[in-house]
Length: 463
View 1 (cartoon, rainbow, N blue to C red):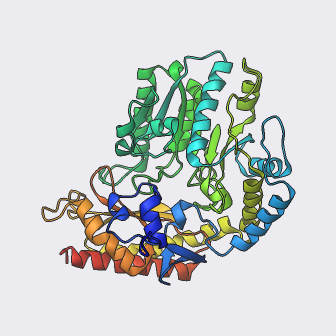
View 2 (cartoon, rainbow, N blue to C red):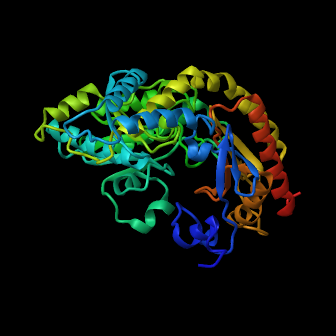
View 3 (tube, rainbow, N blue to C red):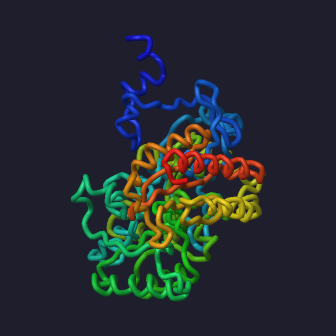
């Protein structure tokens, strides 16, 4: 093996198949190698410091300075009981964490099933919803409704729920019976439309689809409180309350995908609490352990689990070897203890207006068309034509701008953020920093984003 190929970068390019990674990263393009983290920052092997403006992937709620404390809890659990299943047995970390989550979740969501990821969590919710209706004597309720552009995971069932055509198209046909309705994106809609009118439109569309499909064929709706894909899409006033009423009237379950919005990102333990609605099932992952270890799951209403337990199978007919792993649960318990000690949700509530205000001056950049979001989840949509709210440059396409100008500018500035082209063809820049970021850190992040945009605008010839 050559000396070059023996470097971490060389080994990764030769042997490591990376998540959603363009082919160039395996060949000639630079592949960042991160070796250390502290606070809101990570450092690469050359010593360069980056502000992690995406909290890893919307998940390192505590940033990078609490690994030793969480690690101590992990070490204690490894010494006591490194592994045991939850197949007809239980152990203290899983039982205690399930009880804590029941206390944190809204309403009668008291029953917890553990997984290892968000995709697994949504897969588990699909099965639970189907089995619930079978146990009630309505096996024909097999369909699911999700929203356009929404992302719910990469496993077979979860991918079927996705409203992102580019993610699912290659693997179709997927699970049958999934339908999609409009998401809550306001940008590009009639500026004269009120929130009340937008809510009425969305609910009427949903009701119409349910009637068209037959309400007695639909198992569940799945929606993120704040939709990530598409760029920090927040609900208009009264939207989720209207969705809840429609679900109740038609006997349809409401699943809140809180893989990203759970555990403080919007200023409450769950986004459904923040927006004031009651789901039947919450799915979670990411922030429950600040992503220090893989862990996910679902929290279901008592009546759902009891109905399933009393049904023909006599059990929830789903299982995972690592579901409720004692080490992962111990890490999550330590993470939640730290989050309570630091009052992380309260910190987000106190600082979210600072974040929003700090981003506003970026509207002066000639390419910034919209800035939107909530809590510690914000997005900038870039356009070349503000009248049509679109990227219509004949000189350079949106993907070329992102790949050749925006991404290199972010690398130069030392900021990690999500850079993508949305389903409507506009570049997106997403920010979702660690929840420990204070006003000074937010100021630093926004300055780095400003530097990134300024550099990209100049290099792309848009000045």
